[in-house]
Length: 200
Image 1 (cartoon, rainbow, N blue to C red):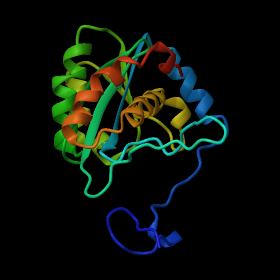
Image 2 (cartoon, rainbow, N blue to C red):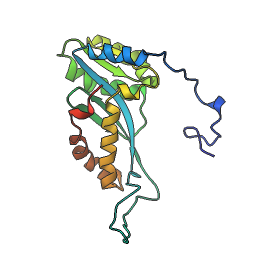
Image 3 (spheres, one colour):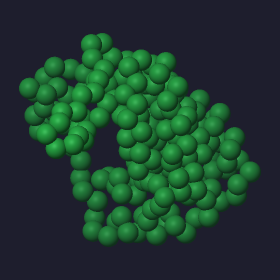
């Protein structure tokens, strides 16, 4: 049976975190508030690993397509990024899972330094535990940055999800078998992200 997280136990309804649907119209209200702020940065994390490869391919009728897929042991990276209305403004990779310490270091070194000179800037994040950590929120406030947490079930409100999807599609085309080749392929994949992915 599928496992929850890293533990081998059945995914029962009781083992999942309780979630509630947002009230009707909540997404529309949130979208309006976000659009009313001159500069909005969406901050998020995503996982990358050496299993990234295309699962389907094309061939002429009657012919077979053959490609290589990474197998055996695989390695994983966490990518942290912040996207504005015109570009993926910042991104770093780290070989550990995201945590409060990791996110705090990222926000202090990347978004805060980049946004400090921009007035009325909002940093929007989902409800991941590190995003709600007091240390992270204090660092953002100290830098004069507004911050808001997106409502539940609001992937459509975060354009960085589109950026991650495009990034991974580019990496699947490369199918990097090692961490070194994965990191080498990241800059060109990142450069493919345009302002079309930064729409709310």
